[in-house]
Length: 100
Length: 93
Image (tube, rainbow over all chains, first blue to last red; front, side, top):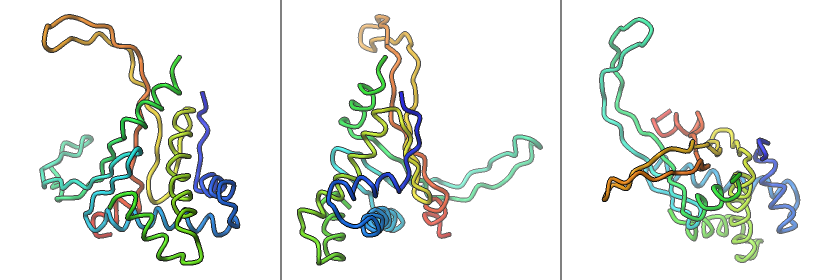
C-alpha cells in the first residue's frame, strides 16, 4: 500500500498530462476548482460532486465545554463545521484498492 | 453546487478553453484524488483539507433484524479533514 502524500502539485501534474495545458495554467485551474468549492461552502451551500462525494456545512449549537486539563468550564460558541460524505463509488474503490 | 455548475463556472472564467476540456480537467482532479486513496495514499490540499484512508478493524457485527452474529472483515474507508483556512473562513475568519 502507498502512504505517499499527494499535493496540489500532483493534481496539476495530472491535469497537465491529461489536457496538455502549461504547468502554470494547470496549477491555476486546480486552484480555481478548490476556490469555487470553498466559496460555495462559505456561502453555506452544499457541494455535491457526483461519483465523488458531498461536502455539507453543518451548524453546531453553542455549548459549555470543559478544559480537560483544568476542569474549567469554557463556553463554546456556535460554529459551522464541514462534513464530507464519500460517494458509493469512492467507498467501493477505496475498500477494493486497499484490500489484503 | 453540483459538478456541472462547477464546470460551468470554470468554463466562464476560461473562455479560451473548450467546454469538453474543462470537463476533463475537473474530472481529472476528482479522479486523481480517488485513485490516490485507492492506492492508500493521502491527498493534502493546504487551506482546503486532506483526504486520507482509515482502517476499520474486523469486528463481530450483528444482524439487527435477527440478532445473529456475523463476522465483518477489516476494511478501509475514505476520510476528509477540513483545512484550517477553510474552517476559519466558514466561521467568518
